[in-house]
Amino acid sequence: MIKPFEVAEATTYKQEDKLRRDLLIFACAFMNLAVVLWLAIYWFMGLHFPANVPLLYQLVSVASLVHYLKTKKFAAFRFVQLCLFLFAPFIMQWSIGNAVTSSGVMLWALLAPIGALVVSGWRDSIPWFIAYIVMTVISGLFDYYLAAGSEAGVSMKTIGV
Image (cartoon, rainbow, N blue to C red; front, side):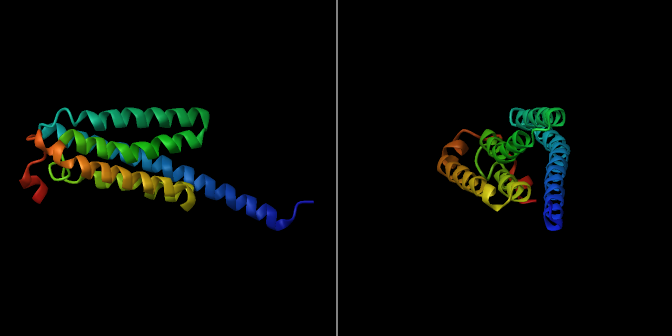
């Protein structure tokens, strides 16, 4: 015999699961709209090579969304989106130069651990927070070397605004 509280608990779980899925789909769509702006700004600033990073981000993101809508495999969709949230800003920063010449674009990567916290829960978000810290340390270690050959970053006037 099914007890009333078990039915209510199962219904609540399904509602929370659906909310998490809907939130990630919304975040994916919103980020893809923001990426169009990001791509355009970098292109018009003359940062043509770094502009390829948001373009590649968008292609992979849309492909993962289409795959999710066809297969309903949320775990794979969540993993791809969180990886994009984490790695794209760092790759963007490295392609422009260092933290200063890229205007600190790596801060956008905080969306990965925060997004994991929202769509997966606190236990599943811990590796994403650790990955963000590791990527930040790696960027800090190589920041000097990445800046040495990069004169084409974001102008200091733009960074100051």
